[in-house]
Length: 368
Image 1 (tube, rainbow, N blue to C red):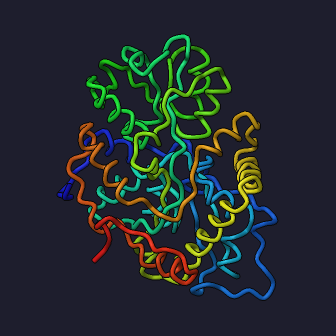
Image 2: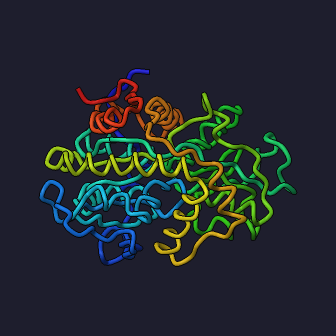
Image 3: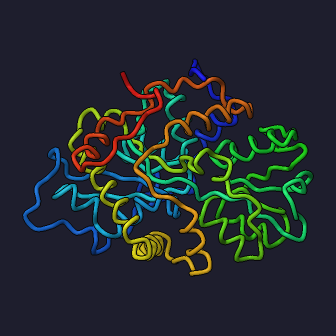
């Protein structure tokens, strides 16, 4: 469907403007703790003359590229004597605010915040420059209350946040069942309960929600609490692939420091290749970094199934981002987004071409 002009409705606009009261004093997100993998090699030179490149990501497994790249030192190696400086976020709107303010230069983020940030700035804030992960989202339910998909009607289902990637996906799935829900209030044939992923397992355990449409590792945490996977979102997409995590960059940083951007993308491609070649070691590295960032590693009964549900990829799966935007429009959360120019995949394709790898496509949503 052709992209046209946009204004975000107040739900997404309010989400993007949420106060940052819970964020650490060091910036919009919390700084990642230093680790041996991030040390600068002796004799290394600065990239683009920069002292540091500020990289943001979430502390969850769908951001495995950033977790592993940090833990194993891939980003620091590619940047030479320019320090890879990490910040950890809990929500997309705060990471977009950090990107807009210059508190970070490059970030790993979900599709809905990327769309929101781009359209809200009239196409001036960011570019998507690469992919990172597909999948890793499931509908997990209390099997005593919900035994089949039709039983979801009339139940209370948690999503992470109004207008976030999983919220939009669940609202679209509900509409496809022929059920009606008011997107803003969450009331209707299904009650959509917006609940932070950190507290969703407790809400599920207490019975205040009957299920949740959530990313990993929250989905596997619910399974560990006795939940059952009723639906894997991957099954709803062609080829079972859809974007869950992208790489975004400030347009100013991309223009002023192309060598630094290329270095980070090279590190991302190298990290993804290493993850796919060494899945067990990569899983352990991601979990170790989660422990460093959050103070607690995931137990095996959560880590193992969560890791299996995520596919690591360089491809941003641009066509699926366009589809996700249309789902938000149909849910009444977005009005006809003008996404042309949201992608600039030339730096990534340069890196992939140099390695003899297949280049990736922007689905007609690239610059130029």
